[in-house]
Amino acid sequence: ACHRPLATSRLELNLVRLLCRCESMAAEKREPDEWRLEKYVGALEDMLQALKVQASKPASEVISEYSRKVDFLKGMLQAEKLTSSSEKALANQFLAPGRVPTTAKERVPATKTVHLQSRARYTSEMRSELLGTESSGELEADMRKRVVKGPRPADEKQSASELDLVLQRHQGLQEKLAEEMLGLARSLKTNTLAAQSVIKKDNQTLSHSLKMADQNLEKLKLESERLEQHAQKSVNWLLWAMLIVVCFVFISMILFIRIMPRLK
Image 1 (spheres, rainbow, N blue to C red):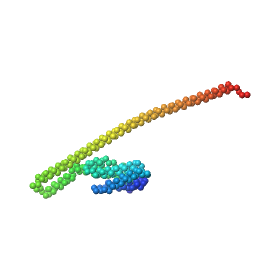
Image 2 (spheres, rainbow, N blue to C red):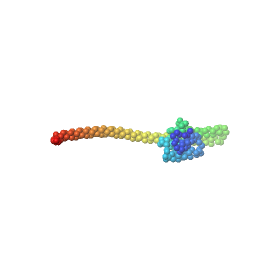
Image 3 (tube, rainbow, N blue to C red):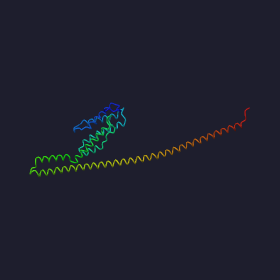
Image 4 (cartoon, rainbow, N blue to C red):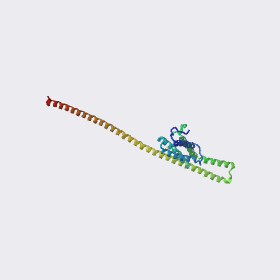
């Protein structure tokens, strides 16, 4: 299933097989101490470098697609090592999945599916941290235990202080997550503005280049017309000169015949 019709060498075939394996592992739920995927991605990088310097290497578009998928897998592993869910979501947003399916059975590239899955997972983690699902669950379990056991009069003040401390921790966690979300939004806004500025400059440069190309084309047409007119004029003068020379020779022969006596 992992064979590509365009795979022309054994090295490329092995790379495609290993890439399929890495994509399937990335789509599955892995343990925190899973190390095989990272080793496989490192092997993919080495195989890709060897494929680039190979004599019978594939087309540049195919190599760029391989590089895009390998970079995506490498970036995904680096994003998973981050501690905060907001940092993971930000790093995942800047990843670029593959554009072409690796196998013939895929309708959508596997890396794109992995990208959507990881985005949904990080969003869910951020929502859970922001709403304090885990802290609320712990607080509810603690309160149920206290209700079952029954509060003792001597521990009422201590229970109230512990409850206030838990609520303060919960509120602090929500404020921290809100600040992280705000920082993430600011970072995205800054990156968007920077990208818009770069695109605007590129559009201006392209418009100027197109304008210069149009001006040069008009000048080229004008010079071509002038050169054509000059060539026509040169041909006309040459034709008139040849006619004058022929007439002069003809008249000279007639005069020569008239002047010189005939031989007896």
